[in-house]
Image (cartoon, rainbow, N blue to C red):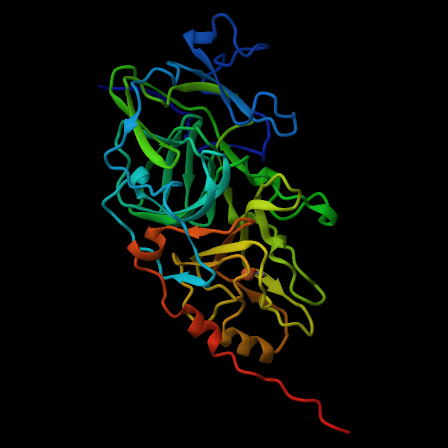
Length: 445
Ligand SMILES: O=C(O)Cc1cc(O)ccc1O
Ligand SMILES: [Fe+2]
């Protein structure tokens, strides 16, 4: 059956600002004035509240949005387990492994659509207790069904496309994302992913607790790193379909369920609030670094952080290694050798990561250096960096590596260890076992 659709003249129009209070209406007068839930909202719309936090969360944390829609989300059949359930989940046994791990590039699976493409590779905690995180690899070659929508009940998705473009129709409007951009889709928001330029692949960090924040800037001052105005939220755009059958798929406690309804979930004509999906272009990141000596902690490259209850300790930070100048004098410029109290899951969107020039860390691959798992530059990188002429040098040209850094010990799933068949058996050997001693005793005299 035909559906009528209203989108703005350019459906990929955005409104700017991080955690800015936005209001948007597909046509004038659709937003009620001066009240959230009038007896009769304009144009016969239903008012529906979408909470991103407890009702009683303090104002500085409280996130919610009011939706004005044609039919409320509640009108659907019971959810039943989905036959095609492929998402490994929080119930799977995680393997906690002290070794350094690295994966070759993950394959693209052209036979699946978005919900079936999510492969949990590592994680910690549980969606049930709303604590911890899940790290997924996605790779899909099919659009979601014409009348399908997906949402995660488990947490906020931070999507890092590595290959291909994503067209995302959300309840709150459209978002288009390419590699080098990220998209955050908060818990509960329904969306449909189509692939305008063919197959896609990338990484997802799912935050089971709270929401992503901009990091504090401390002495950096009031600008820098990811600037608030560069985060882009969609504008209201709706379809009018109360005839065709729709399938709503949710990831709930790590498992996929589906329900049917005879109306489009993309019928929100207007909305206002603080809880919405958004995107960010990593090319806009303002990289700050040392202009004198020494290599700073990578926290200086944090784009977004998912805080735990302990100040300064993240359930997950999203950190990028973007193109930047290195100018430090008398300094070993790559990362130092280290053992971290936090765990580090890394991925590469494109190019080469300056700490791993030995060739094994490739775009679409990954590495995991778990809590206290010793790591640092591979032997090749060490050799080059200790002998380099320390002129100002631009690193990471055409590259973006990233890290999901977590206070939790990350477990790896069976899929991540075995099924994907990408674990490099000799990562450790090739990277560090060839490091030789340069030690020399002081000469007597
Ligand atoms: O291990 C890594 O490659 C990530 C990393 C980068 C850096 O610049 C400092 C510390 C760190 O863990
Ligand atoms: Fe590290």
